[in-house]
Figure 1: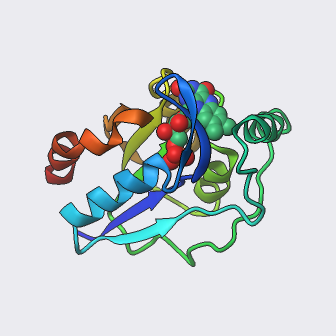
Figure 2 (figure 1 turned 90 degrees about the vertical axis):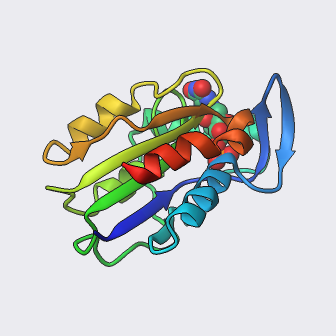
Figure 3 (figure 1 turned 90 degrees about the horizontal axis):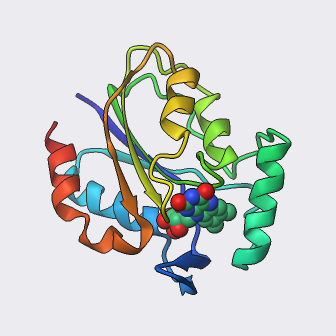
Length: 169
Ligand SMILES: Cc1cc2nc3c(=O)[nH]c(=O)nc-3n(C[C@H](O)[C@H](O)[C@H](O)COP(=O)(O)O)c2cc1C
């Protein structure tokens, strides 16, 4: 079985554990690296905006809110050619305004995920999956969406045991 780990993650200022902090590495990048260590044979792809959001948390939340309001599908820095070869895809993303960042919509709308197993792994600051699970099922009606997990962004460093369980399924 061929596995892909896809993730979106933003380093820089973020709100975490009750205050604004500067993260050298985004929370989901930490999760993606941990999962890759558990699944060394998996391919990894980072969804990166062509025009990244601001490093400033307060500007970034406005930019992301406006993109969501406009239902934007911003261009990515690069994209995969295809996802045909993969059977299982771990989709790792932050919750932005209750769902996934619009760049994740751009990625998901680029390919046919029919028949593939998708495992959503989310980091958040209180919303859990938000509406992202429902949004995922709507976007990918012919995929098998597994239960996955939602982890507080401030707790990704202690997510090893849950990732180990997910990597084994
Ligand atoms: C633009 C923006 C919007 C966010 N919206 C939410 C939200 O609606 N609910 C929530 O629980 N967390 C929200 N967060 C917190 C992130 O989901 C959380 O910090 C996540 O771990 C960030 O992952 P990253 O460091 O990999 O980018 C938001 C963060 C940002 C930057």
